[in-house]
Length: 280
Image 1: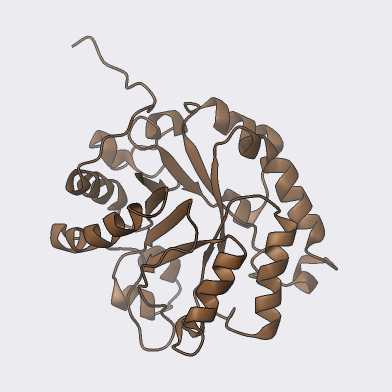
Image 2: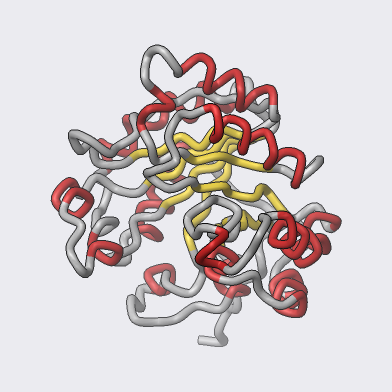
């Protein structure tokens, strides 16, 4: 099975040919079967918010939830005023338990920062993540290229497999120092994720004040998406689900790219939210 989703649900008015329109989650769910939400990265939401998300979508709709920044070591324990990550993991599990129980949590996305490189300490931490999220679906995205260096690559993949983590395959501009390579290999029989950030080399490499807004300013061409199709289909042949997430939305390009890839793959999605049909 191949699924497609976008990061956030509100910023995709292109589905209605109205770029400035803010979508509701229910409207988004009319078009795609899953979404990635980064709300918890900045602060774990209220349990009531999670319940409202679940009520807004069909029972088959799936969520990818980005782990809190403390969980992925973007924010140090000292800065967060904590002595241990355990309370954060406990809070996260308690908040998203209804989503997990409902079978609508596709995965927890552990996106580690660029300074999280290969080390004995970080390998040990990855094993602790599995301990803190027992039996929960977890996907790992590395931003440090050392994990893919020739001397570590096979060990990295073996570690992900041993922990039953899904490998997040990233497509990013290949800058000289800080980019991870595109490496389309699955490490989990249930899920593999392609996360497409665009190929805006200048925006990715130049970390100016507005870097976070400009780095994903990119529209994939038809040929670029077509070139990804063989890898997506190859992994789909041996993995229960391959999910493709578009994060290239600085300029509102994700929705159009998602629909184009859906066409190229010949996909149809069932169980979507019903679309409202006007009288005229």
